[in-house]
Image 1 (cartoon, one colour):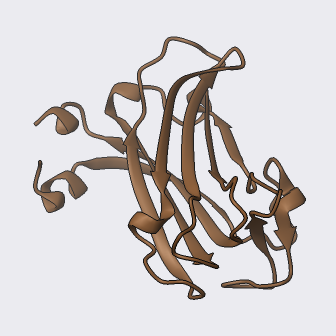
Image 2: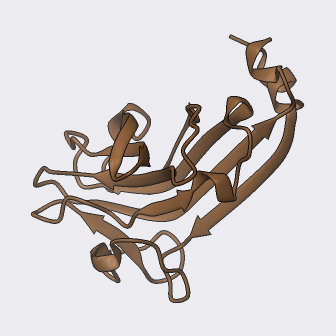
Length: 168
């Protein structure tokens, strides 16, 4: 593993997309938005009990990153789990032509170890190389269980590193 500070100093550019789920922010699958509970503002995304998919970030990669060999996607959200037995996970998918060519999942309970409390969740994944002009990055939370999970303050960052920094 690289020293975090050295890698942090190697970031050439950072493109950030945020959504606190209050009016004015439209992503895909906004049906899960509720005003029952929120970390900031008055809305959050509620998943569980038959509503498996949260609001969904989707962005054409070429609109943000020209060289995927030096790029990382970082996703951060605030989570409030009804139960620490929750099987909810963050999904990061890279897709082209309607099919995923890289699919990554991260269980929320690995970082969010308390129930009924707003806690942060964050992860990073290297953006896989693609030659496809239509490739998109898709980020959402999936919870097919019955335990409710509230999500708020989504932040998706595209981190572009200087040439060679990820290989040092």
